Image 1 (tube, rainbow, N blue to C red):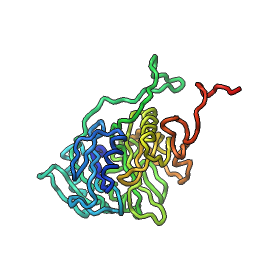
Image 2 (cartoon, helix red, strand yellow):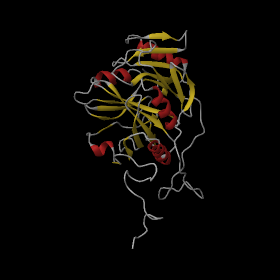
Image 3 (tube, rainbow, N blue to C red):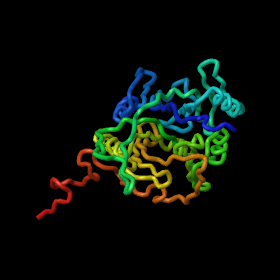
Length: 325
């Protein structure tokens, strides 16, 4: 595609799961707003109106799942203009499952090489005035006479990115590149970070190839205001009994802070904040995969939401630096 900044980001995702009540409790604890709930579907919203939809696995309106069990069944990408939709319709016209439904519901649809249904539509997300707290790095003080917040829980602002396992990395990258996605960084032969426009956050999509790993969902990331909300949200999820997979921690590739949890709707789910913002001037980098490349630092098992320390660690004294006689 020759046009730039056609796709703005993720407008909605659809999960399927049998764990219906767990899903309702989980996304409520995660900090989303429930806007619809009936026997067939739950619909949740972030602060900017991006939606998380939960459906039954046997829902006839869904395309076949790309993997067994709870998983992601659809990604809706928001597009900035009707001209952008026209360009996407042309680019997708030969794709499997292509449907031009602009005259019906304003969308263009197709299946990616994994069989995951993609929907492209004019973005319905709403603007927000949400801002993270300024920081005070040495020599660049931005927060004066104002303390940083302590969050008791998170309220995700938007759906930040999706990550898939793939056994056809080259084909998947070529497919998304044909829709205007741009490579930000990569692990040669193992994975590629893609952003949906030249000027955007570090990645909207990450494709990961592991030996013997079939296509499927790795995780979905939700953007929160700042590192303080990553901590507040993660601590709250721990208090609610949900299991940390890894975190809190920091990704050196994107600079983002993270906290991952196991998701009853499939894969993992991430609180994410402070990722790099790139422009067309960015030069793609290559990295060798490794634990410290994935996470500069991370806490395995999370932090207990009650003690606010590592699991099984006991806080003693009014001050951690208080000496015991």
